[in-house]
Length: 148
Length: 261
Image 1 (cartoon, each protein chain N blue to C red):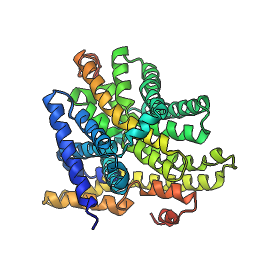
Image 2 (image 1 turned 45 degrees about the vertical axis):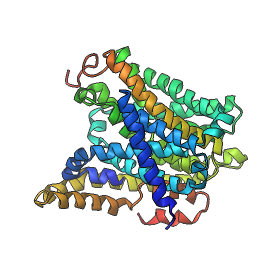
Image 3 (image 1 turned 45 degrees about the horizontal axis):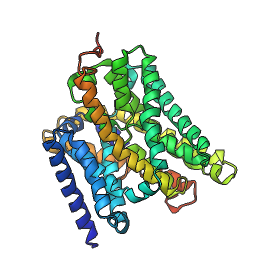
């Protein structure tokens, strides 16, 4: 909500554009911190929660977004690209799962698995995006501009 | 002060730099280097993630708060309006389907339903900041599909609030207790009112104030003024209300924070 309020100022938008490197640095630190936060030995000892979380994100979300965006009659290639872009999880998921863990709604295994999935799915999205982009799925080639 | 408070951030920044440098050398996206650097750290120094968990937790919260602030800053109300029902419908449907998928998975694995719902809700939300980084060219974000994607994540950002409020009420599903609907409905109502007030403030009133503040010639002062207005509206921790809302339902002391804002 704070960002929402600040964003309504024209000057803050200018500043935000200039602060993009700082935002990216913050994302980098967030990823390293979450990566260090994950207990890898617990994940190795019981990999099922991580596998489930990864399947939910990689297969489940990709399928959901592909179907929903395809319903809007977008070309299949750009639809798949959009699904790849939307299926990652980030800071909002961390806040939610942490709150759920704090009140005992989820077990340590699930919490750990979601953090592990967060750290793994973001780089995976970038890798797949690079492949998709190199094949011309986005970047103005196959996606129609809004004013067309 | 605890030495870990200095030591751990320094190690994390160092690891980020190292991971980024290796990714750059291998011609891979920097973000891959950052993610792997954290995991390598957790593997190499297991006690790092145990003994210093509190410092890591605080750091992760600060970083998540900053990222959420940025996400709010980049929230595209006009885009949601421009796309009409598309972003709202697709955003809500996508989130709901993910939650149902989490619930179905929990049923299949014989996990408690509440865990499935929490897992589905946590995996349903996409990050606007990550999406912004994925869209590196002007054509990406200006294309119709790019706008839909950004609109969807904007809807999801707003959707975090009701999800976070409803989620703890489902705790009873684990213990076979009766789910209390009335307090949840009251909290949802309060949050809806606060959100509506903030949206009104952000869309209608503050842009007018922004025109007035343009007269302030010093750019730095203008930016500080905007950020001060933001913090004055929601407090120093944007996700505090969500945590407070969840704790409130479980009778924890931070409940009073909900009343004032």
